[in-house]
Length: 88
Image 1 (cartoon, rainbow, N blue to C red):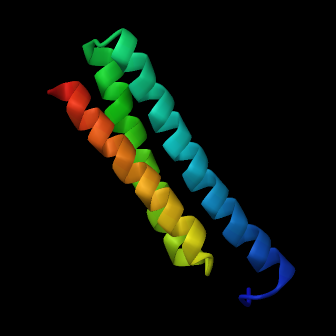
Image 2 (image 1 turned 60 degrees about the horizontal axis):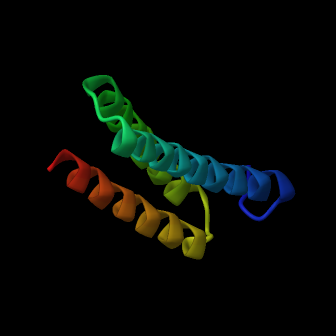
């Protein structure tokens, strides 16, 4: 599939959207842990973090929308910091 055609563009956007959804899931898990921290919730956060990192990496390799990738990367870093604070 050539970059620039409609299917490729749609696929690129879908990858970015999936990365954003993974980061949102991570954020929700962290918010849940702030009110009810336990080992299961911490494990859920670690799993969500791995998925978000993997999803963002895939999106970065499939899209030319660097602005969206940068924004998602900043949000992921913010969530990582929130998780570290939660664990401290």
